[in-house]
Length: 313
Image (cartoon, rainbow, N blue to C red; front, side, top):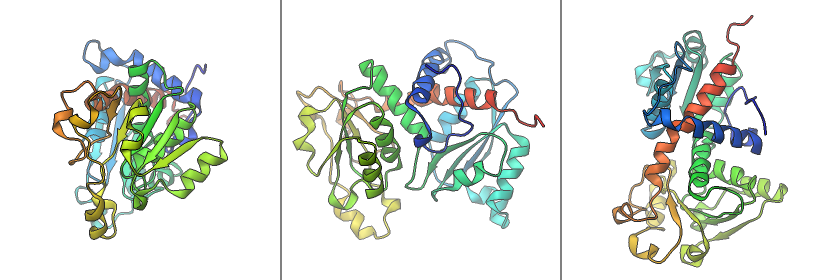
């Protein structure tokens, strides 16, 4: 078991070893009481987190802010280009360098893949990818794994179905890689138009990670422990007509879950893919999952920022 978290940035879940993931999950467990306001932490007192959000966000942005404040730190930043000097033509590189001089870490959400990686190469403070287009969302994956471990006591050998928009859904891209480290039995359920990208399937096969594909959720629902649902993302479709054809491909309701021994997870926001009648059932874990973002992101921020040697030279 590792004793220190050695990553300098959190850009892709592919940068994590299984030991790295377990370390963060263990650290998150230690911070749960602080996350629930049952204890106080001054670990990041005097530290400032910079927030660069170019796409709309509720849970990711607010949970990062909550995590930082629970650790007695503070946040600065913006949630749109229009509220920054980029509206005047400033480059994203200059904006990032400016925030570097004010902050001890950066959290970045952008509609283009690779932006967080680019910024991590030009600043000397930790960078966290909070979602880059249809690419990766590594901190979401960590809180998803934490939710599964809290529920079952382990992640190894679970039967997990990733359902919905697997083509554009960055949460499932990151999650598929991570689950492969735990010998999880994965099934990808989606319309043919929204299959898991070929490059991810090739990566899984190259690492001898087994998976199945299906278009019918009913074929697999009796055999899974976790139904990880995702919304069909209208904003990712170049053609709105294609979106309209498949937007209701998988609708989860209370009736279809009767007699099933599984939990339902969702990165949220949901639109109509999970009926509200599921909220009060034993299957619902998506709101618990949303809370778990706080201790997990606390663990990430604490380890990245305290291990960073800013301005040491």
